[in-house]
Image 1 (cartoon, helix red, strand yellow):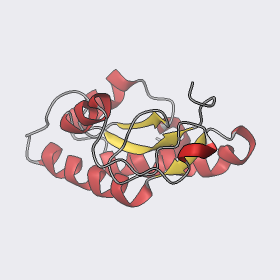
Image 2: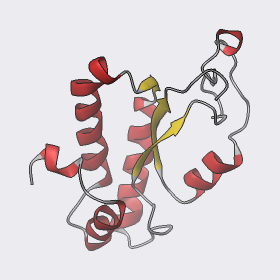
Image 3: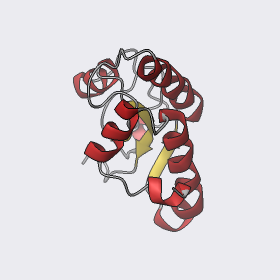
Length: 131
């Protein structure tokens, strides 16, 4: 399957392929980053990418898949979070200059639950000021 095709898998299909051992969370994450690099200059979707931590999360998910110890159907699936959601150690500006240097110490509940489920956080997406 071409890398571009990986970008269009449904969450359910990607999860099934990871579970079956025919899709690597790392390969999927790298394909999505390639697509982001190709298109985001035009779309301006992301305000911040979290490549280093995402690749580490994908490697950990790949190991869990390899040892049949996935945390659930989201384990190894790349996802982006809106820049409204606090993400520990990552600038969370909520689209406003007033928060441009704000780095929360803890994840928002939604982000924590995604991480606990093994999701791979790609980065933070753009938002209207304070939404």
